Length: 406
Image (cartoon, rainbow, N blue to C red; front, side, top):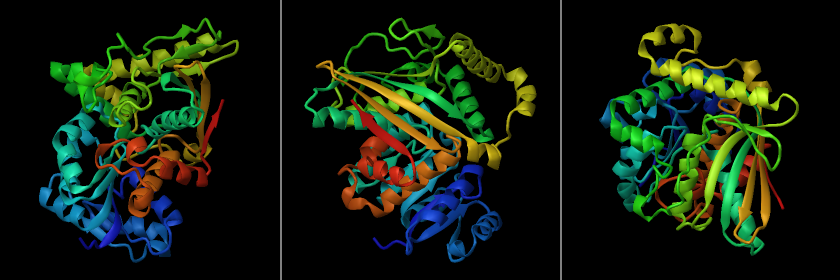
């Protein structure tokens, strides 16, 4: 099928969409055909003007997440669609289905278990038939987690160390802001889970995104960390990581899609780690903030007050916060043979916005330009199973640290 362009960025006039458009304008190779899509041509034109001469000839495409005909036309016009239009549970499924049917590759930034489960159920079969790679979670949710475990697995294979038995991702340092879109997505998932017992059970299931739930190992309870505690082995303190209830499901889906090549009984977890004299205080503070935010969002009468304090949809952290932010993560992996490896993933820039725009932009470029190097796989995928080594290489070239040490 002939395509008008290589990449369509859907939601280009939104907060993260603008950042991703800027990354593509700065780093897409000459000759890459890129279009900007969204509901308003006027707002898209303003984005293109801000990008300067490089985007002067980029097509502007009017499309609406609620208009299935426009989404079908959009999917059929390009090799890759990148979507920043959320909450994805409310807006995302029709576009995923259009791409799956058209054989068009797709990437997004979702961190919503309920949406990805719906995408798997509605689009995986069609995507595998058409050859489309539907790659969810191509930002801070869940590229660092997914690629870190992939790198640990590749290290274990290269050193004949056996399958992975356990892996824990520790957030050592992170600084940045958050946007109204992130809050809106969290609010929607909380509301859905509260009124639907089936959704509530799904969100709590550690294998919620598995391609074969009945085929997953019985490892007993695998609850995410919900409270601060001191680790006896190291003396440091850990606290809940806000993205762990999503990232852990993505990593387990990657393992299952790879026929449990990481390890048939791999235990995976994510935490925030604190050391030093104030470690206990900081772990407690993080736990309190997360519990408070979730609790307040769950109480509907308090939302008008909370909405006045939190960013509105379409807004996010300022330029200085995005520029000075950073993240540093470490994966501690152990194999069945007792060998250990540490994987470090780090980058400069606000994790959820500046760094995420790089991760999403490079995911789009990998899908559009790295076809022969990508994993030979189609369907509803993860960053590790849909992009793998080409994305690792691309992020390293953009200044990300992705290192493995024994």
